[in-house]
Image (cartoon, rainbow, N blue to C red; front, side):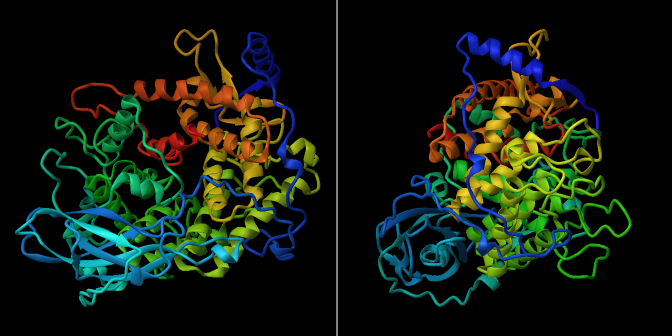
Length: 621
């Protein structure tokens, strides 16, 4: 690790000077003194066995604006787009996600023509809304429905049907398609569309896995509906033209839909086409879900294509059994082992994008990799703080977030209570570790609700004090936020509040004498109880302005629900918004033969936009 130690006294002095000029001050009070006590979660590798998480005192606190008000009936337009070269009458199967509480019986979902005439259709329930703490909300309404209809591509290469809920379906199609056989309505991946780069979605370069298949007829839903369906959480539209241009421009680079004169594969990150036969780190941060986020934001069928293809390709690299040693079931096999006996790198095992794909396509063949990933991260990621005297192994906020996300999405997809209990145990163990820290760690008051840990077990480095990573905490924060949406568990709010407050107070810094970045602020790569640690300087640290700001926005929302002040967080959100915009603009570079929206490295899109899909929603709060 290349790190520079920066004593906090310098940061505090700078903040004090700004405060004297009206820049805001420290907010009193921490939220970490409340919450659960003393349970040890169920046994996993390295976690130890103990009491059931049911013994933890759990307070439920709901954000009333997260789920839209229930509509018992209504209509939804759906656009059907035939894949190039597809003719004749085709069977079309597609998933329609519903907000919580909208539909309780699949018999009351039907398909109509644009003029309101019922069309013959089949409807099959795909998943139910889950809740981790309240039985009355767990499984009582439908999350997504598979609809199957017929469409004549010769007569209408693009057409519209209307989905109506709240009225009984009376015309059954009897087409025999089920979630297990959805792929029978698909075809081989189509060539790039006119106007797309020839290398767009060129997963066929990788011959080690089966070729991608996709719908003959695509169904696309309006962005406004996708946003309120809460696939991952509530979303609001990005309306600023510059910000939207950055989002979609970098997204196009992420799928190789770049300028026509870019013809060479990158010899280094960001300087050419992505070679998906070789690319590995680009799959970090749940690449499929980052692309589904763009579909949710736009409702554009082209982003549904990109996300679907990424999901199918990624799923094909998930180990399903013991036939590909040393990988365990649920591991991402494309990532080579790093040591003898390496069963798989958990930070590459991410099932949120696969769950979104299942909800939107109805493809039940995705359920097994979703489950496999939940099993893998639930049993292999060490989620409790290590004993204080241990200076080997791996414990990071990123891995903790991966474990929470993997078991949460597995529960949503399967309804298997073991995943629910594992997620609850992880969160309960986190609360115990900050309210009753293990022997050798600082007091609960000193920990401030944050899981400080030794740098030796974080990335194998060494620091003068304990350590936490703001940018990895942003990944953890997104997982906790998703869990909170499905649990109303105040413990999640407490963590979001405490992490955001600590980062706002101690982890945002500037270099006022720098000739280029002197007026901008950046998050430290890591902080301890005495020092801030920069990743080779502010020019590197600005790369995490957007994702750390996402954590601050979640924390601000949490603190408002908890009745705590947000002055310090408000100040830093404004600073990091400016830095993130400046950084995005700095990576738009017009040069012959290179992508204009440069991603260096490719995985950057995932940390920039993968967990900040809901920033506009939080901005409105």
